[in-house]
Length: 490
Ligand code: AMP
Ligand code: MG
Picture 1 (cartoon, rainbow, N blue to C red):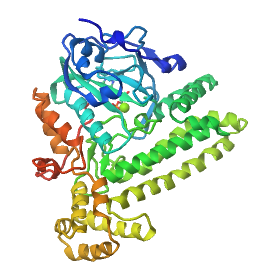
Picture 2: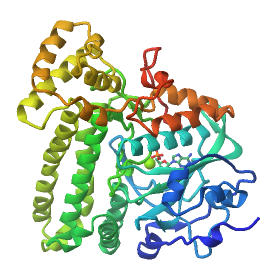
Picture 3: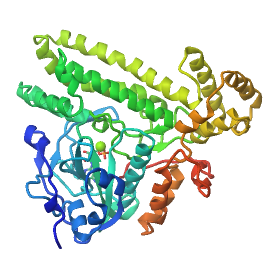
Picture 4: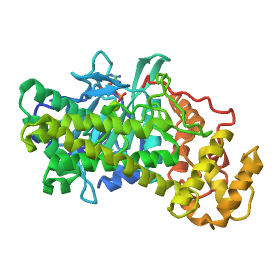
């Protein structure tokens, strides 16, 4: 077997610059790995040849068994607030950063494994992952990418040919090969901030912040107060990101601070799903009893997470303002206060595009009235907006989704008076999203060895906006009426 790795360079800027925030580690060996899914488009974007990756030598590279000379895989350390409770030491308990590569567009991307075996951060976990959840991450990530949402993406999913023990019983194991702008998280900063407090030395925190600025927000380096500017940039990106989720009816499910990136990409698709009947309280995660991460709570929770980010930056802001804690807090609070405006602007623009109207105050009022009607009727979030464009063309498809037709008609008359742009609506409102029951059906089949449904589903969601004959079942809500729950046993 010739080596594919020999032709590849993996860089290690994280390991080079951030000693103390990782542990060098190796992936577990899997005797018979098999390629379950390969993202050919992403491979090409990374300058990798898909046909080569599909060979045994390519698979050996993908699963971390045959790495380029000089590669130095690491498990990253991070902390995090999980459902509001602080865990000082989470880290890559079943993941590894293989290294970084520069893509065809010149961007630095992390090449990362998930499910690659235990590490010093495993905390009693087995370090493994099952086929279902890893393919789920592949599918949802590709859907988000196709929908224009910043996201980490899967390059491949490999079956490990071993069985792993989960609540449901023994399940086939898998490794996800993930590509991300980076794996820097709010939790990475919390981890470095705790070290800073323990050692009374902010060196590691400053190095992390400087690294984040250089990699993701280079303009902040030029600012008077670079660390305040970093907070500004991350606040804006996260506000825009969560606004995108809201427009799509996406519920992340585990918005812990370790799952919030500094790059502004969506990361860690666990018990996430797209809402069907519109209900702001929608929750899919079986362990989110209090609804902390419910659909409508996502914007305030993002701000809460950003507040934890701001706290971890205080020692650096402090230095900028001569060690005065109150003065440091006074610097970050106004930045956190900009979240509301960034979010509102992005949400308004996104939502008004969905109803085909320009961004004006009057139109926002009209939109709010529609949302109230939709909530009462629990109309299907995704298909409603497409239906509404049909009504702009003279149809009654959206109208027929309501029992209280008079209320809808009264609203629609005023809406039609404003001349909504049906073409523009179709360009932003997807027909195909990975609907929960379709995802579940595909993952169940894959778990028993049939990859047909998941391969088909990926094809469908890659082109979300164009109606294709024969795909009606992918565009409709769950015929069994939802009640969908995903479990955290990933
Ligand atoms: P997640 O819910 O995937 O964001 O993971 C939260 C934390 O739990 C991270 O530190 C993971 O590395 C860790 N973790 C999750 N599953 C496992 C597992 N099977 N073995 C070891 N660590 C795990
Ligand atoms: Mg995570």
